[in-house]
Image (cartoon, rainbow, N blue to C red; front, side, top):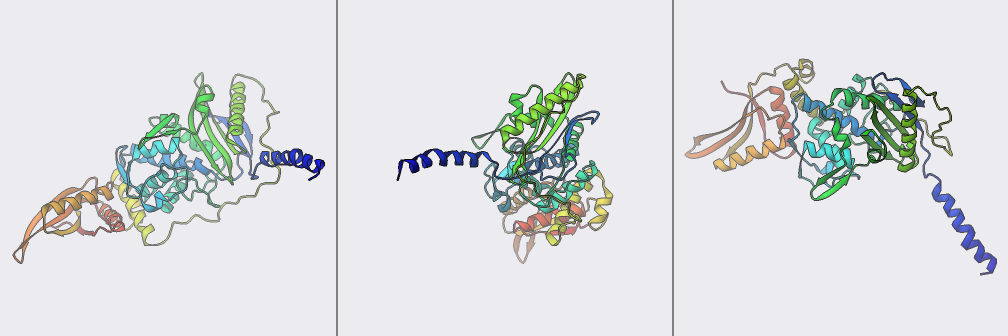
Length: 415
């Protein structure tokens, strides 16, 4: 190789490679909004109503649904869910949950706010909605109730889905709703680290350490969205919520958010807006997103049973008779039972009751445990059952139990 060729290889090739690695590997749309939380007055806005992919900002709505269930008494922070094969198979980030492993609701919450754990998000979705697709429908419905009219959720984690969309303005509304509706739970978003199964997971929101007054709330990233962030900060009893979509890296996204929050607080102090603030450069036009033409419930028996399950919980706890109507009747009186079969030994019947309670803890949370003995053809048998629950809860429990291979028969209690 000639000296000139060697020069080209040693000097020009590394230079070209440096250009390649500094160019973003994806062209994603930029959006940003900073507004005062109380008044909703926008202090900086760029493409705030344009459709974007939320990525893990989706988990803000997952957590909203969980907080709502806890606040209503439908759920407890110490309640446990079992990890399905589907939940365990979700892509990282994750806690590394194993199939059949139990995890508490609070551990799931902490896994979402620190590690942004997709497996924990799916566990919560299946625990509350029966299936993730049904839970996503409920998330979308709640989002629209909160005024997030341009948002559609397709899963609980934010993993890529072309039809999962939102806007910066909608994410601002969700951040405000979390602050306003669940102040007792908002401090979870400031959790610095979470220890689970002897592993320590640190919060991905580095503004908690680098920006004075920052106290939440969520980061997100998929290739089609870039690096996203919803952040909240408070100074002198004035709170700002900022939203950034499309960062080319987490560090540049964070730096831009700090700049925008500084700008917002400066305006609150009476300074004129800084019109020189720019977003992220885009080398090529980003793809245009469109809102799905319609939002439909998932179809099939499993989806219908999942809706029955969640409706039972809500109908019992909140007295929402209209939900019970949609799943087949208003009979929410505790006149039903769940029969788990007959067993040759009393301890086997007790073991099956314990197994069932772990599998369907919410549908059976108000049930009375019963083991009754009878003699048939000269042999003693023990019947295991849960009593004193509503029709909806009995149907929901049996759906969950059958899904795990546990025999179950819902029936009207004998009088």
